[in-house]
Length: 232
Image (cartoon, rainbow, N blue to C red; front, side, top):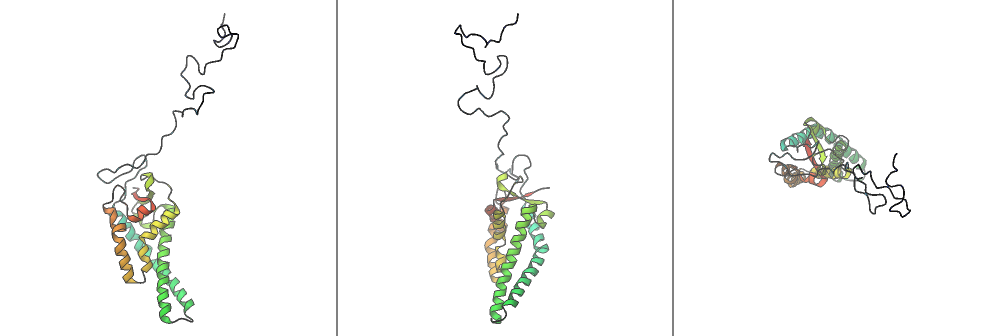
């Protein structure tokens, strides 16, 4: 003769139905607590862990943790990529900036002296040169995470918050990064001012990655919150 479940019938002769336990007597306890318990249930054991935070670099200069992390680019790799961009992109950018300044000068020729037109055309040339280079870097990094030079050297721009792994970079951060590095282009029509600006930016932007650790960042990288990594 089969017996009814232990929770059916009277509880100690009180005439009230006994309530079922929150889990089977022969099974493991529920990870979500008893029904009707106050407060939120504990998290299930399969909750994914948080993404790893950037850790210190090793003695060789490689840093980053977690799957997909890549080592920061070496200084000579970054310098070679910049040189390639300067040769491959600098010539057409210079020609386009010169064309813009000449068109502007032609439109302003009537009613102004030739000296004023020439001086203003030089200013327009510098602004156009600067804007074109900033737009080139911003668009390339936004779409492909690399410029032509970085593509040939197998380099990529990544957010430093991701510890060398791919991740989103705000457009404003990329534009600010490119603007700071190419600031000397604003004075490209004036050799004296251009040299002065390059001297001011040489150490913080060009040479700082030589000794900066753990991510080998220049000042423009720190401004944009980025790190240049090797993808090969």
